[in-house]
Image 1 (cartoon, rainbow, N blue to C red):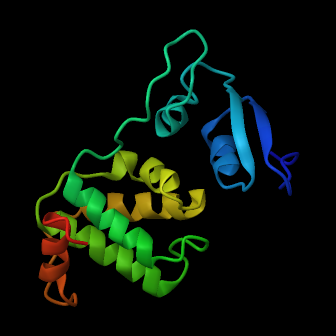
Image 2 (cartoon, rainbow, N blue to C red):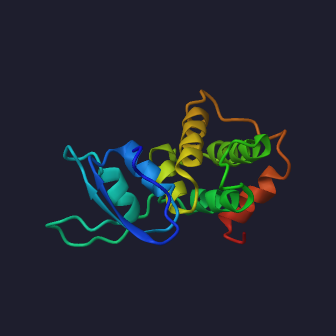
Length: 169
């Protein structure tokens, strides 16, 4: 991991011993034209391959899968992606508040937990890997609450949810 350096021109990276932490580092780099991932152990790069619809040697090429099936959740996350500073992820308190509100609104309306795939979804949609990991942690925390969260303190929670539900973002 210490040998990976940012490049000023588009490059193809060959990643030996492709473990999830190394592949997350690669996902955060700019000017990457392609990645050849060689996993050390079978299965260690499977999530990454699903994220990007990678070509796996000896198998037919598969298109990238829909990581989150619920369209309302996707539209909520897309709205969040438009207002969060993607270069800093959830480091700014207001960005973390936006993410918290978005996820709590979705949780309060009974949507399925997107936590298992939210990190890959976020990286695929322009988030830096560390910000996507923070979003996954926050999502797991919210979906592990024993009861539905209250939306009374959130500004326009119902209006935002209806926008996501009716796809008029």
